[in-house]
Length: 531
Image 1 (cartoon, rainbow, N blue to C red):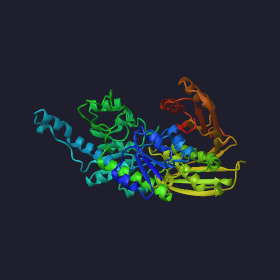
Image 2: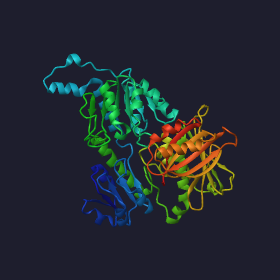
Image 3: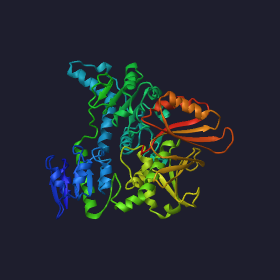
């Protein structure tokens, strides 16, 4: 067994790989390609780019281990096509990021950087140094994943009240973490400190903007150790200059290094250079963890923290792929289109699908649902574990064939039992061209491709609605690729649903004029794969 370690990991991790009969090779950039020819495993950090060419050169490669969370430096499609498993170490730096978040929070509360600078400049500013205690204050966490949960644990030790906004954490999971779930508007209005721990997605990009900043309590403070793209820097700078916010602490920027950020230099901003996860312990942890994962896979076939499909034969992959894609697209659709936090996911199979590998289809549904909101890559290998960790339950049922299609799949995002909130149900199939198609939404029949950027509309069926929507899109310079429409019954004013596939990059700003159309009750932009 030959294992290539291309980037530096902890010595403890390297020693874990030195099994009897195993050859561990520490390579350089110049020797990597030559050594990979007969390698079984490759371990990298962020410096080594595992592109399609590199994968093609490694004919024996079975697994790539990434010591870290992101896998942007690995061509997942190329690895999957070659049957190469890719593993990462999500959560390995969660404690480090949580502790840095609290370091920023405390520095804001007690004005530590300003007072330190004054001392160094020879000033004794004791009379103007009144800070604020954390005890009794409210901390609002936007995102309650691994890092957010670690921050919540530390906040409780400081006797803080903790609110959290996370559409993909169940009430039960929040209760276990001793955190109160709240709508975003309430969290912003009640929190003395707001800390961002959300994944970057179309739904969360620029979520901290002029509108949401205005909803925050006057004198509140903002911390961002997640992703710079979660906030509009100019809007945040404006809120800080006006005094609406007392301060902000950021470890991340939209552009890094921040050459033109309006936040840099503001007296009530604390900034660090994207180092929240950079501790000796975190580096030791991820290096040791990836070595364990690779060792267990090579020795015993145990798969953990995989971020792509497991190794399948070409024939197996050919047969299962269309329905896995359908399942993932349906999961992504209901995730983005639903108006309620899903506590339960129901998957119903009809036809041959009920006799196929339903565990794979279920996992593909969960992968599509979770990938819409999580940074870490979720797929059929790790989807069930990720969903369980976030408190989602999954129900599976079989049903008779309907609508004249031999195989159909139905996915429903459902609220907590007894809740008055409404869920969302979508049913689809795969046609002969292997194209995933939707057939029904909440019992309303319509047929449309599940790919690309889709404008999802709910409206009352009244004359002129389609024309008004088309006119708005035309005025915005947005081209319609396809337009699918369905209604519950042939009665004026009945509930109707439309799926409008749009060409190119479509800004969220198109939604505002569409929502002003009187008959429109809901409008969302959905981003599905394949477009």
